[in-house]
Image: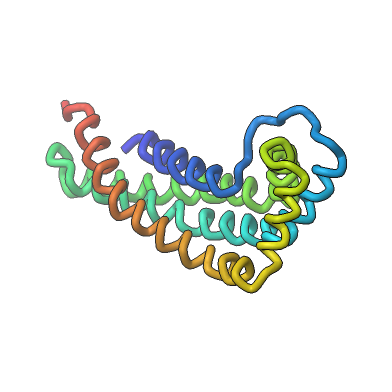
Length: 183
């Protein structure tokens, strides 16, 4: 199987994470007071810890999901002999190991989270007023805000599992349908 499924899965996962991280193209600089207040708010939200945890989870899950999807597709292929399937599975494992090492280099980059946060600060700073950012910071420092932050990893993990349960069969079917006919 080609790597297009892995590309699709990676794009879906990264788009989901982008929604959480709010990483976007740089926007013009905002008022320095708003930027400073935004940095305080992001600290109160524990964004650094959340992003680090999310990236570690993504790095761990991506090869497993890719292996499951590609294995199902290879095993479902009626045009392959058992020996050809075994060979494709072996090649798939080699490719996944190689791409996992490449992805690890991206996820392990110590500047990744810093860059994501730096890109997020202007977005928040230009979306909310100084007063709104201060209110958000107060919320995230409140008992309910801390409870929300404590529950985000569980909520995200369960939401991710739901998205995988709903999306993966559809992606697998689409990929199986797009496979060229055996010759």
